[in-house]
Length: 245
Image (cartoon, rainbow, N blue to C red):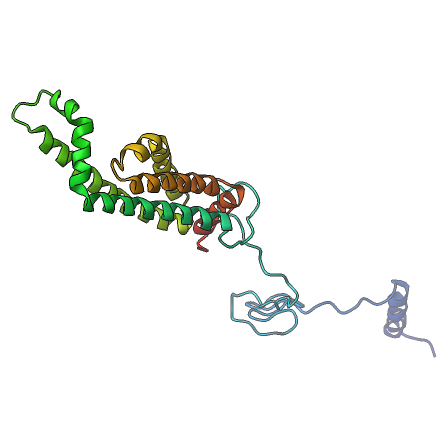
């Protein structure tokens, strides 16, 4: 039987499909409105299927083997981060020597106040002529000498109490307090020869205390200027700048 035109077209159609190459893979379904393309995670869902709050990144597990963050130096700090250290012996011994010097000075001043009449008589003999040469009319030189001596003794006690405050700040690691103590100690050392010999007057005990006080102040200045002291004051400054002390 002879095939018709319709039958011939149906037989040739599969041959054209075979001659055109392998059949194409089915394409991805078209994206729907309001949904991401095929293969992309849905909103609020990680690529592994974990649900997260909408608009937030998925949480990442922390590394249990991670090292803690090292302390960082504050802004403007130059040099390596200093290592923690206790108050060195040089600071403790230096401030202790300074306190001992203040204690001896207070004892000497109190002893002079107790024997004030004796010290005043010696002062009148030593400085009476100088007070008479002042030219102040109506002023008793003896009375003026008494006022000056009493004011100087009381003032020395007030200055000693003020230095105790600076010692406390230096003990806390404030470098400015150490500098102030150096200034006071330097003034005392400059006036030490005349002060130790003349301040006691007729009281050798006070003169001896003055020389011991000078020795202790010199030791305090040297101890507070050594390298361990400098390193510790530098550490305290860094700790206050970083809020660690």
